[in-house]
Image 1: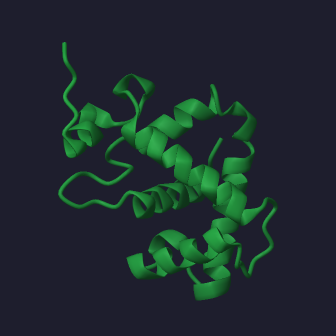
Image 2: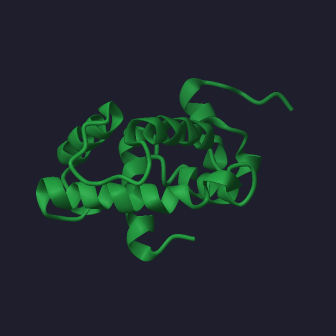
Length: 136
């Protein structure tokens, strides 16, 4: 579904939405695993859009900075994602950048906070972060 560059771009974007702090960032917490799993299930209708989103984000990074999105500094990635969120893009996007980015953020949150049985929230890291205890 994703080529190596698309996957690298996706991982970098996920880790800017949920950056590492005292707890793991989004990719380490399983958000990418959740998303890839859901693209084969409940989000199958977006299976073609996600690689296009990654390609467009990469094209945007090339247009703005002349390098790969994943190679940009955190601040540059954040600035770029803020512009995408506003729909202020330089590259030609095959989908509405602001609308798709809003979905992407929602999917990252789902992957981070959902039940670990859905493929994300690895080892309940997000639940521990917010102090949620599963009563058994």
